[in-house]
Image (cartoon, rainbow, N blue to C red; front, side, top):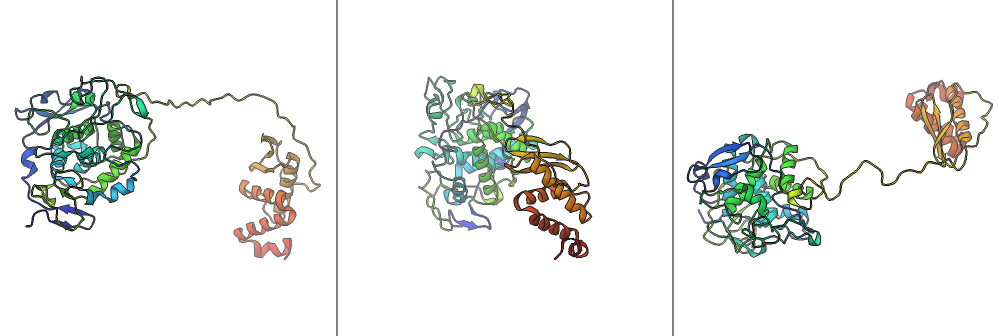
Length: 452
């Protein structure tokens, strides 16, 4: 078939091209788990070729993989670009073939390492999109080995301009900065987190955060650490939130993953975005496209929609359990005890006797009188006195009793009292008419008692 040709599906555009089945790659991995919550891949120092394991911690990794950045949801998203714009542009933006292979491998390997995690390649891909636009942030491109060239480095995490403050954890080995950390690679790992759990995802004996194979597999291990089931909405939210402590980040990542699962993706060459992406329906230039076709990709796993959560952002990844703002149940100022400035003015009720007597009136808010009755609390209009409220209540009880409503509900009595205080006896008549109409009694009682 013609190189780079796309075919349309009902929900998006996908690249169709030959691929060496990724199952062959997955079979090269051995998989296991460890009880150590801090180290996910200690056995991978020499790569995967020597029978080493992709190790999934049995406790969730607590250190964030990346940190929020002021003004953007993630480095791969342009400042000011709305989430809806990001999602709607996924098909045209494209996924470089090297990244697509890495994401696909991650799902297949984790299906062996931790089948209960239910990791979809689309979730790893969504994080790659938000963190670095699949390795193309800052003019980078993925070379034939899947390494970002010249290299992706986040801003200095020195606490300035709203950034987190993370002192150097790698002696500059990964980020070239001996004083403070910088997030590195296509999945933007903090060096300290990478040192603890970075995975050699392609078996070349090197754990390189700039290598999309290593970075994607590490992201997969990170998300599945602990007893995580990504088909569960709360687990999904918690896993992505551990990766980056921003709910806006979680919401966008999940939206992108769902769009990818629905078919909103195409495979493109490994160059920078814009170099090898054309309009949907045409062909992609370049002869290096060798991306998975639909039948060679692992089966898509749909994701639930996680519940929204409010989370504060930690200032240091080594202190990530401490939020910058600690909520408290205590009020910021104590109420000052004091006596009311004015006492309620007592009033006399009309001579008409109510069918039931209200209890002793009370006030709760200055300017608003309240009255406790047998059916519940009745509230007067603003500015009315307790005496006026009691008069209105007595009148309403009397008028309702005339039409056999001897036990009105709190809502019925409240409507009547409010009508009396705002419109007088005529307003009460209308309220009672409406009530009788609802009760189906207007034709029987209304004409004789209320008149026409």
